[in-house]
Length: 125
Image (cartoon, rainbow, N blue to C red; front, side):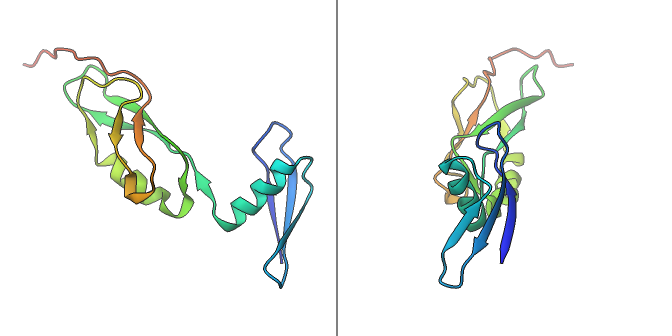
């Protein structure tokens, strides 16, 4: 059985064809470098994704704070991770790189602030 992928490791965007063999092995064609072969196998066996999104803020002039994951999370856990992230609210002060959620869903990946959220006073009333 074969599967098609487009490699996103470099700007060449190779059209990859991964073939699964009865012995459990895989072969990859269409790659112009070894990284494409690794990408296709990883994408087939255990796809991973980086997370970039925003979280709500309180007591800040910024309504949303951009965040990024410290590494990729399993694609199968992506939506569950987003649910946890969207339930989070950031309170100033936050410095770029601060960990907002540690080890999200036991993936070993932290969710970090991608921007500084300075302490500001909000006029209420």
